[in-house]
Image 1 (cartoon, chains in turn brown, green):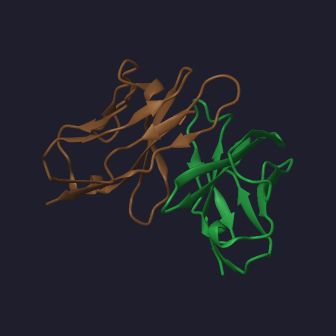
Image 2: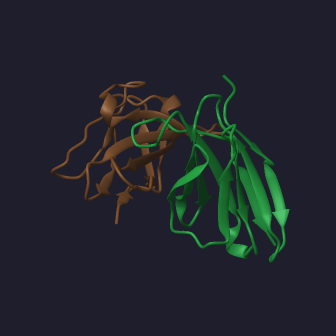
Length: 110
Length: 114
C-alpha cells in the first residue's frame, strides 16, 4: 500500500534559519511527488512538484529514491513561510490513489 | 480564471440523513477529485472523476458516492450519515489527471453531523 509519512507535526524555527520538512514515502511503482502548502485562511495550493525540478519561494525538494524521501528545504526561513505543508504522492500509470501526508505546521519566529 | 467553487460552505445534518455537496471546477479542467479532511485521519482521497467517469476510488464505504456532469461539475453524496462523517470535504480540479498535474483545491464544505 502506498503511504506518505511526515514525521514532524510541528516545526518551529527562527527567521533566517534553515528549514527542512521531512517526507518519506512508500510506493511500489514510480512515484510522482508534490508539496502542497496552506497558508492561514487560504486554500491548499501546490508549492512544487518533483517532476518540474523547480525552486519556488526559495524552497527545493529532491527525490531520493534510495531513501524513499522527498524532503522540502529552504536555506533561510522567512516569517511568511509559516504555514501547513503537505507532502503528496501520486502514482504513474494505471490505477492509483493520491495520498497525502498528515502535514507539518511550520512556524517561523521573528 | 475563477477558482474551484464548492457549495454549500457549511452544512449541519443529523445522523441517518443524506447530503449532497457540489463542486464546480476551473473552466477547462476535466478531472475532479474529492477528499475528506479530519484532524484524526488527515486528507483522505475519496474518488476522482474524469469525463463523467469515476477513474479512481479511495477506501470509503459505498455510502459515499459521486458523479460528474458533462460540464465537469461534480457532486458527491453521502447517505445514512454517521457522526464520523463530520469533516471538511475538499474538491480539487486538475487539467487532465492527477499523476503529473497540479490539483487546484476549493475552499471546502464543512459538514457537521449531529
